[in-house]
Length: 162
Image 1 (spheres, helix red, strand yellow):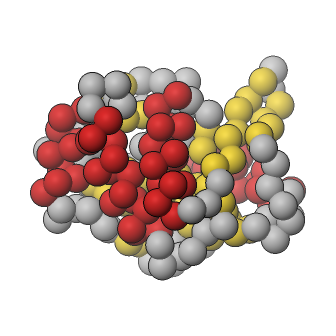
Image 2: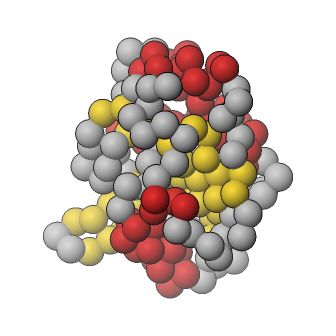
Image 3: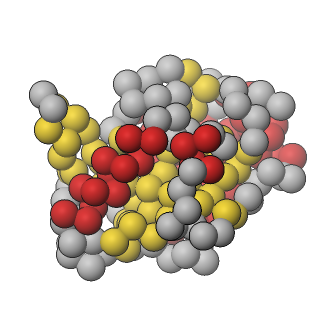
């Protein structure tokens, strides 16, 4: 499929990423959203702009506080709801659920483990919804390995610093 590399040449996105960087979290590295809400806004708007042509009806994230902040900005800009996935005692749940037929974009700061993408894709399919894109702020091999869906990447540097 195609890769949308929006933001790579955008100095504002690069500055925002340098300003806040990333931090470890439950489901992988996330934006360190605390230091600068403005930087998160810049990154979230860039991701929304990259996804706008795909026209998702919802977004799915792994439920961490920093990913929720990013998803809030993207969802607000695209006017779509955010669906949160979390693993509880080995069971992965979506909250709220998705309506059958909904076109869903998966978003994250990074997709550092391919199984995180696969798990969400499978869960969305079991709900009779359809994944339409996988987006990340930072490029990883797991994102590059996706071939059946469009991917979005805002930056190519691995640690959020140029």
